[in-house]
Amino acid sequence: MPRGAGGTGGHGDRWSAPRPLRNPVLVSVVLGAHNLQTEEPTQQKFSIARLFENNYDQEQILNDVLLLQLDRPATLNAQVAVAPLPKQNQELPQGTQCLAMGWGRLGTQEPPPSVLQEINVTVVTFLCRTQNVCTLVPRRRAGICFGDSGGPLVCDGLVQGIDSFIRGGCGSGFYPDAFAPVAQFASWINSILRRHGDPPSGAR
Image 1 (cartoon, one colour):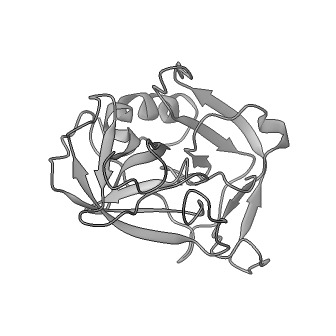
Image 2 (cartoon, rainbow, N blue to C red):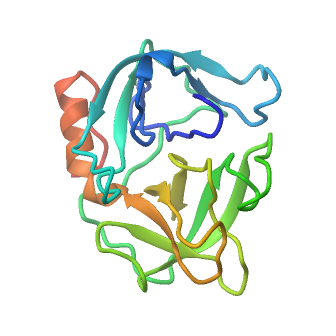
């Protein structure tokens, strides 16, 4: 994908779930990457065969998710695996500990890293819309940043969110970071998988 964009491997070996794309013809999908400055032997590169949107609202930043069908199956291995999804409308309680990751900037005015970054975050409900999952890093000015969009929020082994937007700069210490809630889209994701030949995930 272009530098600064991310995605999450979905169920089946031909699916990914990044944020909306303006011109998918110009985009390539790279799985198994860790260092963006290096042609790693673990990397697998694909073009996009089809994409599926779900009424993305750019003004309100709602439904900030889409599915990509890759042009061929990926090879699943230690570096490339499918991402388990939650059930439809599965609750994610405040205080849940999660892991966010991406290649976004290291700070509002800082450059992006070459190596994939991870950060431990906590689910919060204050200053958060019901249409999002939100997280904060307690007692630290840290979090997701520009370029992390599309990356996963993993909680208890499930992909519960997709990096969506920030407020007040990166790691403001006050405003939570916002993610598209995968549990609100699980049925839609499964309906796409059913219609296009892949078995559905465990979500219903």
